[in-house]
Structure formats: structure tokens, C-alpha cells
Image (cartoon, helix red, strand yellow):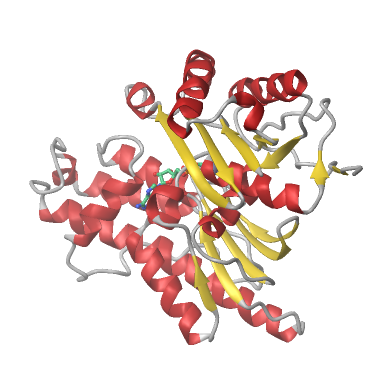
Length: 355
Ligand code: KG4
Ligand code: ZN
């Protein structure tokens, strides 16, 4: 059974094939260089690039996998959340393929696909505590099965990745800044780890608010203009910059770990204990975060599940894999399903296939 996955929710145009749960082929074309010129994603440019690349990448994918269009049994596409113009390119391309081939299609929640991505490499275990940390979202879920996700908490303002990118911009680092801050933090001296606050923890909920942390870094930069030397590369960056990156990275990681610990404790009290922690999304590639959440899971006697680094950031392997899972569960969409822009709830409006 072959599932084609399509991803175009933000600034990566990606297509992948999963056969019987295993990754067959995976192509990602990133637009990072285009958007780096503007210090963030420009929606109109993103849609145009998706539109330009989608057809040629589809041809290249089939050629690389050495399969014909009629070998594809099921289509899966990220339907949101994301940039509407970008999503529409992928969703309509997938609908066209499904219509022409008379094969089933499913619209996938991009955030759920991030969390399911680890299933490509290792068995998923449910119930799980899902922690999705990406450029646009920071969500904590209770996950009971591939299609049963309940949001326990989320960010009230900036997402964790957004905080990385905005702080990186203030420090004159290239966009997207998360990976660079991660690398600079490794060279930081842990002298002043409490330089920045652990925001929004004095409550009993599982929500986040990272915008105050961003302001704290901004004020610190204003007081320390020596930080603003032109960034050339990680190796030649000055020590003060590396120290700030470490202090900021620690603040984000501590905050996430405090809320993950709280979530595990709350689930236990409710007698709804989870078996594992699933960490996913672009920020799940952060070395400090991975290490700390892995240790946290160990301390709670839970399994730790996270995709390898190349499957943390946006890709279509996760969409194809999620699609394959939904096909096994017998789920399909009618062709009229909608693309859902960021900010709207993604409906669970699938149907069960008639055999
Ligand atoms: O999941 P993703 O590819 O896109 C969204 O769906 O948003 O996440 C991209 C985000 C960016 O904000 C990027 O800076 C961040 O993930 N990121 C990282 C790292 N690698 C990517 N943040 C911290 N540390 C990293 N190593
Ligand atoms: Zn994403």
C-alpha cells in the first residue's frame, strides 16, 4: 500500500512516499534563502514558490522511487494549520491527483503529522504525552491513538520556535535562527543561566507565554551593545553572544520541562497516566531540549520518542506516514474538505471508507 504525502503549509515544498509504513522516498525543497532576505516568511512569495515547484518535484519523486502514478493507493496532504495561500497549492494539487486517479485522499493536521513522524523510525506507543514545538505552534497533547488528540495546553502568544527566530533576529543571526542559537549555545559558558525569566510558570495550567522572554532579551541587548557584532559564523562568534544564546536556550528548555513535568503529574493524578513522551516539531531538533526531555522521561519511567533531526522540521515523510496510519484506520475525506489557515480549529471531518 503506497501513500503519497504532500506538505506546503509554510516555506517547505515537500513530497514523500510511504509504502506499508516504511519511507520509500522523500524530497524537501526549502525556501529558507528567499525568506532570509526579509528576516521571516513572506506569504505571497511562499505560495508562488510552492506553485512553481510542486509539479516538477512530483515528477522527480516518482522517478526517484521508480513508480508510476497509478501505483499510488492513497493521497495525504497537510490541510493546516498554515499559510492559506501555501496550503491551497498542496491541497488542490493533491485533490487533482485524487480526482484524476479515483483514489482516496485525506487532509492531515500538520501538527499531528509532526508528532506521528517518529513512527517512521520506531513503534509509536499510546497513550502518549505529545509535545509539539515548532515555528508556529507550541502545543501539549494527550494522544490516545493516531487520530485521537486532545490539547492540554498551548502558547498564548509566540511559539517556542518563533521566540528563537525573533531573538535571533535581534542578535543579527540569520533566519531561521533556532539551529544557529543551538550551536552558539553549545559554546556558551553556563555562568549566568538565570539571566532570563522562566515565563508563565506561576500558575497550574499547561499553557505557555514566550513573548515576555523575548522582551527580556531585547532589554538585555540594549544594555549590551557589544553583542551586536556582525555575525559571520559559529566558530568566530564572540563569547558574550554564545553566553546569551545559552542563557536564552536554557530559559526556553526549563520552561518547557516545567510544563511537561506538570502535565505528567496531572495525568497521573487523573489516573490517565501516559506511557511515553513524544517530542516533535522544528524545535525538537534542539540538542539541549532533546537531552533534557529524554532525561525527564527516564526519571518518570516513560519512553522518550522523537523523530531524528531531518524529520523534526517540516517535511512530507511525516504527512505520508500519518496518511498511511489513517488509511489503516479506514479514514478518508470527501474532495470538498477545506484548507485551514492558522488560528482556526482543524475539524475532524473525515469519514470511514466503505469497503
Ligand atoms: O516545524 P518547523 O519546521 O516549522 C513549523 O511548522 O513551524 O519548525 C521551524 C522552527 C523554526 O522556528 C526554527 O528556528 C526552529 O524550528 N528550529 C530550532 C532548531 N532547529 C529548527 N529551534 C531550536 N533549536 C534547533 N536546533
Ligand atoms: Zn511544521
